[in-house]
Amino acid sequence: MAAPKVAVVGAGVIGLSTALCITEACPSCSVTVLSDRFSPNTTSDVAAGMLIPHTYPGTPIHVQKQWFKETFTYLFAISNSAEAPEAGIHLVSGWQVFKNPPKEEIPFWSDVVLGFRPMSEAELQKFPRHRFGQAFTTLKCDCPSYLLWLEKRLKATGVQMHTRKVEDLWDLHSEYNVVVNCAGIGAHQLVGDQELFPIRGQVLKVHAPWVKNFIRDGDGLTYVYPGIQRVTLGGTREKDIWSLSPDPGTTKDIFDRCCSLEPSLQKAQDITVKVGLRPSRPSVRLQREDFSQGGLKLAVVHNYGHGAGGFSVHRGTAKEAARLVGECIAALQGSSSRAKL
Ligand code: FAD
Image (cartoon, rainbow, N blue to C red; front, side, top):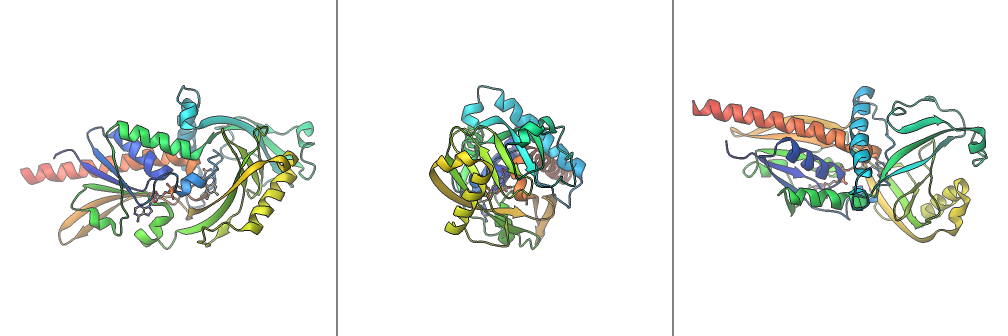
């Protein structure tokens, strides 16, 4: 069999990291990324990029923890290298605060982030409306920088990138041996997944370079996440809302909520508003599917539905998707050598 041809549909954090893991696991593969939008126009560009896992109710916790750990370890190494500023990866310390003690005082990811501990009474004085809190150090991606860094690495290994809207995965069967579906919320239309739904998120990106610590209200709705260039203020979680238009009333509400957590933000400048649709489903769809029509076959690997936590687990799910691509190629090579006998 000639060099296996693999198409990855989607150029958000999931598509680009999956393409990279495929080139690492299968250097002889010819990999192409096909996407109707690239950075800076993907959902991944809107994200805050904090490594704090979201919980997928349909996926075993030990699997989610493994994905998070692989992602943390990968990005920690980048943050500790000369690549860090270009890749937009940095460590950030801060607090997750609660009005009432949470159900889980020790979350499953507490021994993956660094220095996880309950907040002291002195620290809690900063948050007079909150009674309980957790302090830790985690990683943050400046998302557009990280996506461009991934694209640069892919191009350096010979991966082709084409702007193309794929109407039907089957349309790719004559050009590629394996197709990997990393279309995010686009999979709703592309493969008709009724379990996939949007959770609309609106955030503000502001200039406030004096804010150095992250603050997250434990309800997950209000957060202040400082990045290398800008601070992300959030947010909203609106289920089944498809609108990408910013809502001015919501902008004011987010700003007020964040100022009540960090009053110095009243002096923030240069406010821009972004909206994205989190590709949500009970569990990430990470599986093989064999398509066939009229005696012809196409091996497909799905890797989408990362909801509110795509950055937190992307490297772990990308490695698993690359392993599944390897299985598809081994099966194709087995069938082509049997055909020659
Ligand atoms: P996308 O980035 O949407 O990429 C999908 C790609 O597929 C795009 O390139 C698109 O053009 C392409 N595509 C779709 N359909 C087709 C088609 N038919 N043909 C060709 N191409 C197609 N996660 C975290 O871990 N931490 C955070 O702090 C965080 N903050 C967030 C804040 C907000 C406001 C939002 C909205 C999300 C946040 N997330 C966060 C979640 C994170 O953004 C997502 O989980 C992640 O971006 C999903 O990545 P993706 O590559 O699957 O999707």
